[in-house]
Length: 504
Image (cartoon, rainbow, N blue to C red):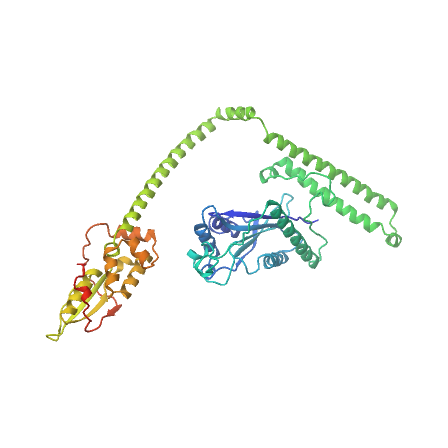
């Protein structure tokens, strides 16, 4: 009988990206020992547009954006029959994904094929998927993992398919899933013309009267357990072969045709009996070994203390303790440094929030005024200066009957800063609005972005604060103007509301 196993694993926030790299053998797992374990197949599907080129980016965003203590992924870990070849195994896994996940969830899978204790193949599949449901709404990484908004789905994140269940309901759901896997897997074994079948039923349901024996990986590598395990597999194989030979021999017509003496039938029966005895013997040995491990793991505290005392007497233990202390001291200094850095960063971010956009962002403009009275072009009136001063000069020029052109100046210091770019784009649209300019020069960054519904990132503000410390702004040297220009009316309408405008 082929091996049947299916378990469901829940991955916490922060674990998705490293685990995806592990199953796909990427990153630090790229040099995994291929002689001991082959990566047979890998793939992904249902990824949002921004993660199709790199599925691991999806898991990174899940680790980063999901709520604290939230779930980043779920995973099916499934044993695949060694009786199927790699092509059939790949088709079986993809069919399971189509049946259980469909187009509802983003997923990534891999098929691993390590060497089992008996020296043969031990193929299995890892299928990771996000609990977030795909609903046809395109969301960026920031919004994809937000809380779902039932009234306005487009304003919230993708809904999670994690309906709360009682323990009994979860158990029943897993049992139903295992039944579906048994049916699908046996269908593919039949198509592949294999006599092997899997069963997901418990030993009790199959009428086998013994306790299940489970070993950890460290235990199964123990030479004594490994030897017993291999002997049991060999005995089971001999038993099956003997049964097959007996059934073949125990056919009257064939006995007559090939003139097989009864002694061959007796030999087959003796082989079966011997195999049964070996199986019983190895089962008893496995059970006894498992019991010995249980006893060893339940040693008293007195025995553990004695073992520790012996270990401490060795020079290696002394060196390990000294090394641990050094590492602890380094870790303590690192934690202290991290706390200080975090406190300083928080202080800088708070300072940046309290400054005005005029002082912090420091958008620079250039203005050119045409003197109507003498029909000639004056030199640049304001030069490459902060936006508030430019507006003041343009207003005064307009009052005097001149026409003016306003252009964006050198704002290279805002490159790569999304928050600053959003504020700049807003001000370029509202450049002739007295209220917008007044808010830009007088409100704090927090109040300004809240009032005008602009997305504000604290890290962006901190970088601006580092570029422009809280001190009087010094005009940079004049540089070539950009191609972006904002043309005002040649004869701006004079608004009396500007007469008492504050001195920007």
